[in-house]
Amino acid sequence: GGLMSEPYDLLIRNGRIVTPEGVVTGDLAITGGTIAAIGDITGTVTGTVTGTARNEIDAKGLWVMPGGIDPHAHIEQMSGMGVMNADTFETATRSAAMGGNTTVISFAAQAKGERLADTVAQYSARAARGAMIDHAFHMTITDMSVPDCLSDLAALIAKGHRSIKVFTTYNIQLDDRAILEIMATAREAGALVCVHAENDSIINWTRDRLIAQGLTAPHYHAASHPRLAEVEAVERLCRFAEFLDQPIMLFHISTAEGAACVAAAQARGAPVWAETCPH
Image (tube, rainbow, N blue to C red):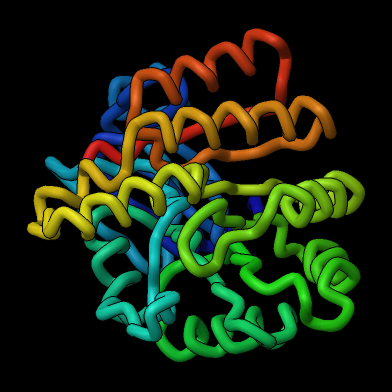
């Protein structure tokens, strides 16, 4: 007689399975955290999965799909103003899981004077306490004056922390030279640089004039961030990416002109990506 096959860890029966080829209704078997077999009831893939499993779930009428990745989340993070996010790793990742996300990338924000390795260690400890799904970090660099900043950064990238976040505005902004140094380090070590790109001077100039006129109601917040503040910084960072041939990811583009800058940079072959946040 044939050998009994080892039981699967999990068999999900009768689900609507989302595959690269399309949606099939059938069974999906998992072993060691990896999909071991997919069986389509209609017989176009491999037939119903046979065999036993340590656990079975009847997913009739339910969707079975790859977990989503949320690459932009603020979790248990200290703001520049010294306020802690309301979301803990426990509440944030529980919410993510309920929405079908199985990986989240949040920010490990360097405090002034703090070594980058200490920043990452602190956020890793917060995540270890509460995270219910896979997680990674964007390392937010706010203070280049700490000892060995760039060599620490290279060492962290080598350990697998391959995303860096920089700001061109707020009280955590870096100047152009610092951003170029970080991008050059990332290029050498193999990391992505994410940017909050707005022109700080345009924003400050505008804000000071609004305050002087007493225009401080919440709806003036929009006026205090002129469209061209974004456009100028997006264009500048696209040129940096082109100059160094270093990939950048521009966060939360909110203007048509900013999007056009990105499209033009991509058309020139610059390694530039961008996201929008419609909310």
